[in-house]
Amino acid sequence: MSKLKIAIQKSGRLYEESLQLLKDCGIFVNNGKDQLKVSVDNFPMEIMYLRNSDIPQYLEDGVVDIAIVGENLLIEKQKKIQIVEKLGFSKCRVSIAVPKEIETDDLSYFQGRKIATSYPNTLKNFLENKGITSDIHVISGSVEIAPNIGLADGICDIVSSGSTLFKNGLRETVTLLKSEAVLAQTPQLSFEKAAILDKFLFRIQAVLKAKNSKYILMNVPNDMIQKVADVLPVLKSPTVIPLAEEGWSSIHSVIDEERFWEVIDELKENGAQDILIIPIDKMVI
Ligand SMILES: Nc1ncnc2c1ncn2[C@@H]1O[C@H](COP(=O)(O)OP(=O)(O)OP(=O)(O)O)[C@@H](O)[C@H]1O
Ligand SMILES: O=P(O)(O)OC[C@H]1O[C@H](OP(=O)(O)OP(=O)(O)O)[C@H](O)[C@@H]1O
Ligand SMILES: [Mg+2]
Image 1 (cartoon, rainbow, N blue to C red):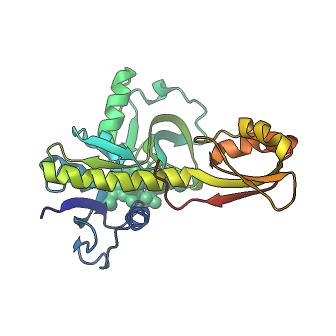
Image 2 (cartoon, rainbow, N blue to C red):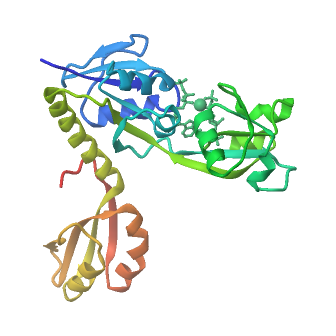
């Protein structure tokens, strides 16, 4: 029987959340990461632990079928690889930064100047579109140090919290792109493997939907049920269960976590009390 080969980062920013996602999908990995190729007992899948930066090539060559990889890296490596699902973690952006004393945010500052980066293709395309010609200096890590050691006038690198820039006396000026972890697939997938991918994707989507949703329950006077139901931005219609106390009901529903904060005041104004918000483990709609 075929197994779907998935590449996961061996160590780094994507590693833990990638494994957690597999676990949330009910896919249990027995071995530690020192073993670079691991089989899964309860799902037709084989896991390969690889460097994030090598993954786009492996996908293109069909060495692996699918992978969890940084979206920015797929853009950088310019491979024709399809993103199957955005996974919502390892969110970051690729930005240009300058020493904080440099006051301009204008890209023309970089005309003829030197920029250090680990993402030369992304930067080159961006600058070309803006009509700027710079000297792109490629380094593979610790890019933020470059201006301090006189290696470059600015940098182009990943920014998340901004703390690495701050600690190195740099200031973010222009954002080139936003990125998050994605599930990507090789261009050619057999019929059998595509069917396994569908099953895996179904599980991933159930996990992702559950992450963004909460189970909500509250007590409401019976004459206010309709008004409260109108306020709740719910999936279908809420479940209404009578309370032991005459004239009151408990309303249950599922709500987007973000929307909850928008409607909480209106729920209270319409008589909702004892509002509980509970995490959901999986969600299949
Ligand atoms: N500070 C960060 N916050 C959030 N996401 C990040 C951050 N740094 C990197 N990422 C994302 O995680 C991915 C992996 O980054 P990481 O630094 O772990 O590996 P890498 O340097 O790209 O590669 P390799 O596995 O080849 O050593 C990046 O491509 C990016 O999408
Ligand atoms: O804005 P922040 O939250 O500070 O994150 C940004 C930093 O994180 C990444 O480096 P990482 O720690 O992955 O080290 P690396 O250069 O060895 O990949 C990136 O290259 C930045 O240096
Ligand atoms: Mg990194």
